[in-house]
Image 1: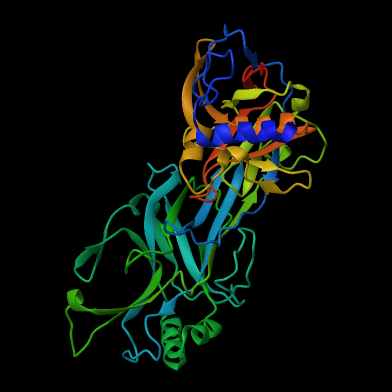
Image 2 (image 1 turned 45 degrees about the horizontal axis):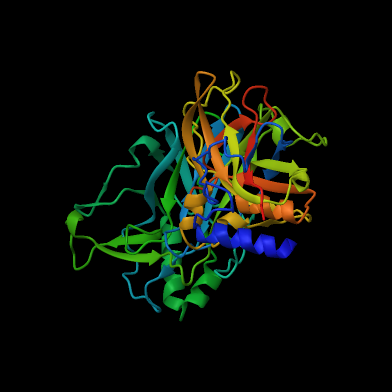
Length: 465
């Protein structure tokens, strides 16, 4: 009987079809933004009486070395200090390959630059002229394109000998096009490589018979801010690593004159480019909470079940940890709606709230008894947009007691239905933001807050014969 009911409820919710329970006048499938009429005698509404334990946990690492199938790879680079959450550093590990084996080029090109195409997005204070200095270093550890590297993975780097000249970049101007050899190219950052390293790259390329030999000799590059202890910068830019053509993907560009040419607008170019088929990559991201207000929440060591406020950053970092016990005490019924409501809280101790803004959407995952995360039923199947439309999780403005606040509504009826039918001791969820821009965005929300506490609104219909 238990399995039959679960299968029935799951089938209804997967299909998205609205059907009626005998004697019921409302839809079985109700999206997160819709509340059924409370005067339906077969409907039951539960809200503030549910027990919810909420606190902050640290998700200290995510896979940033994966290659998405339907979009380009995007990584951040630089340092950002948040007055509440602390300092974050981003660095990019990547490999490049010559366009052909046994490369034939002039012995000494005029110059070579590392190109990072701007992804068109920076998070933080984008209205100020802020200058940051970047450099490129040689990776001395092996890297493999077949490894999904995590954001906390450290590869050995030759810090004593940077392979580039230091580059000071006005982060405000990254969005501008760049004139190269007389024509405008899409916005990108250009870090000039030292002549000795440029010549070494060419020598390795000429000696290598295939991509494997080249990567074995030139294991990779690491791009990072020169001063990772800078406490003044409040913006982080993001760049494309993969792309379809030159100046739209990460690469090393060589510039040289041929046949006595002296016209700077007619220089020849050759590229060593990042390719998804052959090159490894990942975004290294580290957080520093010590000495900042977020520290006792993120690094808590006591076993308290709930905090007044809970914190979230795009992974890696702070994450909402939600536990909902006692669902097994609810009657076995059709769940019309189960809506998790999360409300933003403003604090006087958070002066950066206006510029280091929150994500537009939140994404839940389940946490099993062993602590491993899994895809909740309401996200299945994950390869189509329908489940995301159903689960919602979008930011919205609502009025609570005459005050406009920011909320996120997350629809999880199938997962709640499963917990009730299986008599689970608790429903355990972890909630984060988008993975498109790793490390960006943050949110302070109500946990057991006196005014804006997290809540789960459940509407269910009893089953009649």
